[in-house]
Image (cartoon, rainbow over all chains, first blue to last red; front, side, top):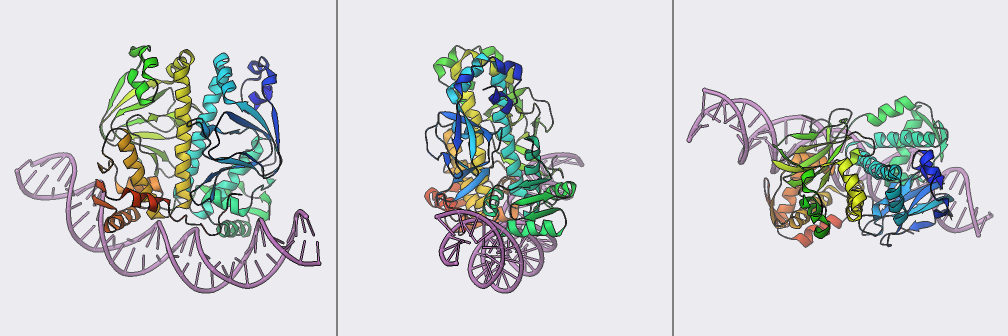
Length: 233
Length: 233
DNA sequence: CGAGAGGTTGAATAAAGTCAACAAACGTGG
DNA sequence: CCACGTTTGTTGACTTTATTCAACCTCTCG
């Protein structure tokens, strides 16, 4: 589909020349898993609609959430390197995905350099996104992590055409905690505190951002180990 | 250089046909920076020799270390996505890098599919490596992080031909802490404890791994929030 | 309508951070 | 080559933060 191009932000003109028949839609029910750890890799997926989570499974069978993909995000990129999935992806809501066989991606890249470049960019942005998460996990207090999580989510909702002021969380406190490296109790407490401080309104899954600037400031504030940390030289 | 192929683990036969003139060696002095945040991107680098660190700079000018690249690692991949470097890289020892202009990489990929595939794999492995770091930062106790750090380092030294039993740390406790999301005091304490427990011998920068199995076990142990965490279903 | 999952809140605990003192190693210039 | 200041590393005492454990509430869905 030319849709794939839109989703990957590729010039639509170039897109129109692609063979549309190659990519099939895949409907997913809530809680369904697309691929699991260890499964041989041969295809990527682009999210067409719906909300998902990608998780790492540790030696105890415990989930660590790595991302909450939504419309336009590419799934499965971590499996290219070793030919097997090292994480798994599950639907948080009913979803529609577009199958993107990796061999097709490579073939298309060889034919359309625009597409190839876009694909490189998408992979690299995955790297950047994860780096930001690493920065957050290692250096920020619980309050700042939750604040950043909320503004990040708002920005992403905004970029796919939803309101960035009022939206629904698709994941549980538990899942947010797993993503942020916090317990669900801490997430709950911080959210209550942000509500009490007048920065947000929260009612279970419904979030209203009342002071985006204030939230952003909180998210930037207070590296946990700020005092004797490395200064760039 | 055919050397680039070795470094990226590409079949040497395919390599021999490449034009060797395209890649130049870059010598770096200790503490020198290769690129800095915001710098426009046009070239990647492969580490030929030496040890480096890649760092994220936060809003306060504080460094967060993202990786400790060594021989065979590819630098600069996070800049492909937005055309600018979002992190910076500095030499921890005198180094030698190989310049790999991105346009050359793309061109070579179009000519040699083997090379293109290898490049995709390298990008994807970057993603996987970061995911493992995220898993560690969010869920493991200080002791486990340090243990994992040491065995990880040992494995990497081993894979580039050094001893995995006795090696030198090229970074300070501060830098290890920045990488693991811990203060340098905690790193120091944990290392002393591992020494006292007989798992390692440590004398400032010199590390001897005495019980790799025990260390690995420690690194796998005790997700901090194990009790009421998500079970894979 | 009842069971279970999800969410909130409180009190106690444990883990890592902070601050401080000191020792050892490094490296730079006399 | 030595002296001296700076950086790096270790350890201790104390504090803070987030976790743990527990009670309770609400909503949802068979």
